[in-house]
Every structure is written in structure tokens, then in C-alpha cells.
Amino acid sequence: MEGLGYLGLAYGIVWAGIALFLFSVSRRQRALEKRIAELSTPEKKGVAK
Amino acid sequence: MRKDPLLLVQNVLAAGLLAGVAAIFFWVPTEEFQGVAQRILYVHAPAAWVAYLAFAVVLVCSIAYLRTSDVRWDWVAHGSARTGVLFTALNLLTGMLWGRPIWGAYWAWDPRLTLTLVLFLIYVGYLAFRANASDETRGARIAAVIGIAGFLVVPLVHFSVDWWRGQHPARTAIRPEAGAAMPPEMQAVLVAMFVLFTLLYLILLALSVRLLKLESDVMDMESRSLESAVLRPRAAR
Image (cartoon, rainbow over all chains, first blue to last red; front, side, top):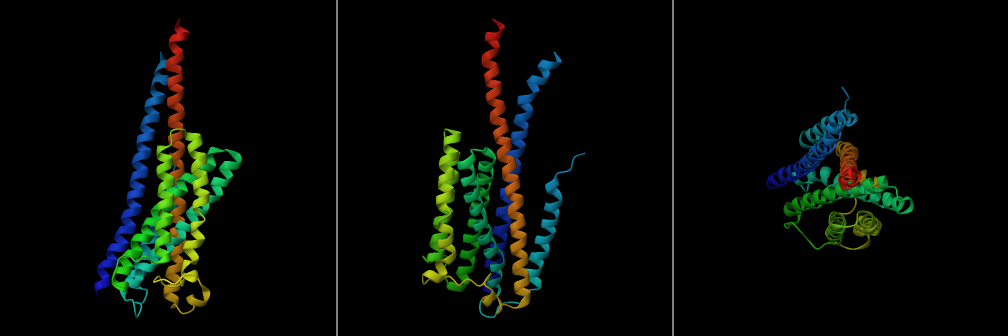
């Protein structure tokens, strides 16, 4: 059953690769949303004053 | 409360992939000559198909971007290149893990493998160029040319097993005459994995395009806030 280890590794790499891609996209998205919130906050404060 | 339209598709896809993997491990018969390593084919071949599809989308959207200068085409091309690089990497890695028990080596300088590596490097170069371009618009236009030219390697990769003699097995996954020799369970699971990987590509593409749009929004907001910071003192005078 030598192939079993390679089979497990192949499927592990596929799911890990996809998970890593999704993780990096969601992390970047959160950072950008935070930046958008930061950039819009001073304008709102200005209007309130 | 507003629900993400992608969420339902993502849940259906996750359930489908779980069912697909369960079928690969517990339902599909073991191939006589290659043993359990043959089951790598169910992710290896769909990853190759999705890479072809992703780079075809880069080609079409890059042509559209060069013709119209509409930045939305560029976002789709850029997002598709990112996804294509991911699936090409997965295709190469799963192929190496199949090669070790079957050929006795992770890598052979076979035409299919070598050309797939070339394809991977071209689109890694495309992404690296985009990441380092100082002028966004000019960078996008040059990247579009790279994206179009890079696609020329895709047919070479696909037909390399017919045109040149190498170690890589002949195309069996989507050829009807070869597929007939495959047991129906194997065919059914392989087709299902092709469909599921295509759906996965579409979701990853949608997420990547959304991210690129957000990046563009942030850049616009930053330049506007910089402009207003420069203009405010003058207005106050």
C-alpha cells in the first residue's frame, strides 16, 4: 500500500492549497474593509460637526 | 439582514466536494495496475481542466480590456490568472505525487510536465509583473499582452501527449473512445469532479474579483482623501 501515503498527501495538498487561497483572500478583504471604514470615518465626523 | 449570494453556492459546493471525496475513497473501484495512486487522477485532471479554463478567461478578458479599456475586464483577467496559477500548482504537485509510486520519480522532463511548468511560470510572471508595476494602467495593458501570449502554451500542453513521445499517459479523461474502457463508477466520479472543480473555480474567481474591486475602491478613496488634504489649506486661506 505504498501509494496510500502519496494519495493522502495529494488530497491534503489540494485542500490545503484551496484553504490557504480562501484564507488569504478573506484576510486581505478584511484589511481592505477596515481601511475603507478608516477612510470614511473622518468625512462622517466632519459632517457631524 | 443581507445574505451573501455566494454563500448558498459555497455550501452546495462544500457538500458536493465532501460527497465526491467520499465516493473517490469508498465507492470507486481500485485500478488494477496503478493501485490506489490512480485515485489522484480525480483531482489531478479536474485541476488541469480548471487551469485551462482560467487561462482561457484571462485570454478573453485581456482582449476585451485592450479593446474597451474597461477596468472590470482587467479585474476578471487578473482574478482568473490568480486562480489559474493555484490550480496549475495543484495539478503539478498531484502529478508529482502520482509519478513517485508509478514511475519511481517525482519528476521527468517529459513534454507535458515541462510545458505545464512553463505555463505555470508564465502566469506567475504575469502576477509578479502586476504586483510590481508602478503605473497601474500601463501595467494592466502590458499584463493583458502577457496573458494573451501565455495562452498559446495551453494547446501545446494539452496536445503534447499526442505530438511528442513522453512518459505522461495519453489523454483518457475526456476522450469518449478511451473513456469507454473506464468502469462507469470511475467515469461518473470523474465527470462529477470536473463539474465541482469548475464551480469551485467560479467561486474563487468571484471572490478574487470582489477583492480587486475593493483594492481599487481603497486606492480611489486614498487619492481623494490626499487631494482634499492638499486642497483644504488653500481653501482655508
